Image (cartoon, rainbow over all chains, first blue to last red; front, side):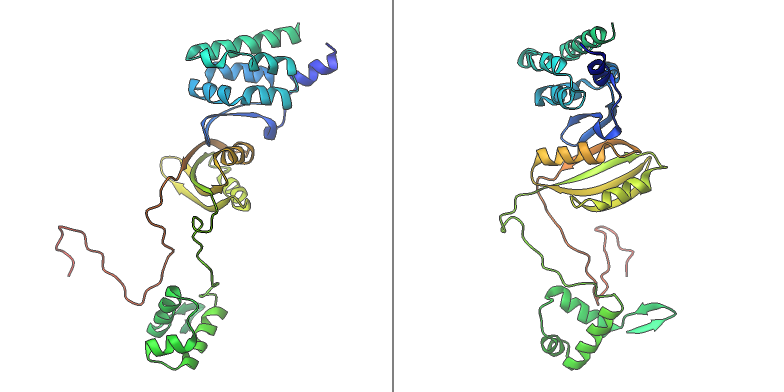
Length: 107
Length: 173
């Protein structure tokens, strides 16, 4: 992968384009992420309800695809077996996907 | 109506005219005059003066959105902010057409309370996620979608001040 594409995926986006974690319609947790690295860190600290809310709506892959412009990670998250994921498995699966991608991009 | 050092004092006739207009703003000066036992020219003069002094700000139509077939959802947002940024957040909120009312409140934390309308829940969420959460100083947002309205009365001026009695107390005479 070209270094230009890699730096694009790893860049820090503006506040307007950051990912804002909600627990339900209109209920913002106060946690946001402006880069892939920050997104991965926030996955470990945000309320599980928020992860479930966004996972089932498809918000994660949408943001990763449209804002970070990383179709590979977006596709991996899209392919997660959402219906069979519950509880802390949601967190661990998301974290695993994001950290694996980050490692690949930075190595 | 009398003017005292820049402030306006309404007399009983003014208050009764306002009360009548609040009930039905399409009444004629003659109707109001007949009802109050005063000349229609007096009603006209009083109304014009109250309009000139900004006491009567505008005449509005109250629309029943449900009967008009407009399907909107209304929500009350409580926005927790950094005290240094709260004024700016409140001003930014006030600029958006989706937000109908904006208030600040100081309880344990500095809060902004806002009433917002949207076509549906998804639009409401998109608006809050894209336009409110990114505002600098916004710490958290709690949103309650209104499911049923029990009372919604605009402020109304009255010529008869009402005493408020609390059931079980006898100290008001």
